[in-house]
Image (tube, one colour):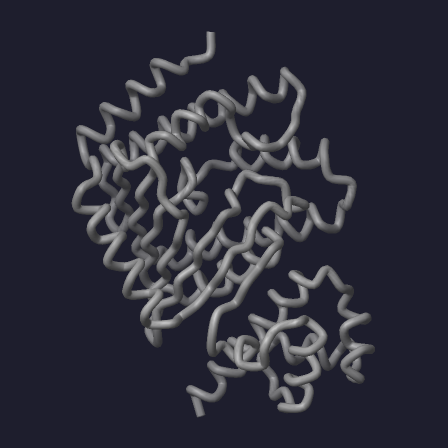
Amino acid sequence: MAAVTMRLSEIGQQLRAFRLESGMRADEIAARLGVSRAALYRYEKGEVIKLDTVQRLAELLKVSPLTLLGIGVEYYSRPLSFFERVRQVEEEADQILQISDPVAYLVTSPEYDSILNRAIAEQVENKQLIEQYQEIFTARRESYRLRRPTMITMLSEQAIERFLQRGVGEAIPMSDELRIEARRVAAMEIGRIAELIEAEPIGLQFSLLADVESTTNCILMRGRERMMLAINPFRCDMSPAATTGVSLVTSAPEAVNAHQRVIEVLWAESCKGKEAVGRLRSLLAQHAIQ
C-alpha cells in the first residue's frame, strides 16, 4: 500500500510540473479533462487518478502516458516547470551530487535572491510568473535547511570567472548600477564558498573543475527508492521567462549510471581543499570591483 501511495504522489508531482510547463491555467486544464479544478488539485496532491484521465492529460500536455506515469524521460522547456520538478525530487533526496552553476543555489545567501529578484522584476511583466518562480526557489532552500541531505558540488572555474565578471543574472539585461551590485553579490557568494570549503561542514563538499573546458550541468538526487537525474541548461540566475533550452529528468538506469561514472571521475580529478580555496581567492582578486 505504501508503494502505491508513493507512486500516486509522484504522479501528482509530475502533473503539477507538466501543468506549469504547459503555461495553461488550472481551470483551463480541468475543463479540457472534464473534471473540476478541485479534482485536478486533488490529483496533484496524490489522490487516485483514473487511467482514462491520465490518457487525456497526456494528450493535452503532449507527453506520453508512460512519461506522465514516471516511466521514461520528462522534458521541460520552461525554467519554472523544471525547477518545480527538481524541488519535488530534492524534497525526498538523501544525497545530491551535482555539476553546478557558479554557485550551489541551496546554500546561497538571501542577498543572492534579492539582487536576482530585482533584476527579474525590471524585465518580466508577468507578476504571477515571478511569484511562482520565487516560491519554488524559496521552498527549495527551506527544504534543504530542514532536511540537510548530503551534498557534493563541483563548480566550473570558467563559469565562476564569468560570474565574477558579469555578476548574478549574467544573461538578464539590467542597469549599470544594478550590474555593479550584481557583481558585488557574486563576489560575496564565491567568498562564502571558499569559507565553506575551509570550514568543512558535515555533509557539504565543494570542488573546483579547473582544467575542464565545459561540462553539462546535471544533478543526481538519490532517495530511498531510486536515483533521479536532471540535466539542466537553465541557470538558477536566469529569467523565469527564458525559453533557451530543454532540460530533462529521468530515473532510467543507463542514464543515471553513465552520469554517475562521469561525476565520480570528475570529482577525483577536481581541485579540493586548500588548492580550491587558493584558486577561488585568486579569481576574486583578479576581478575585484574597483
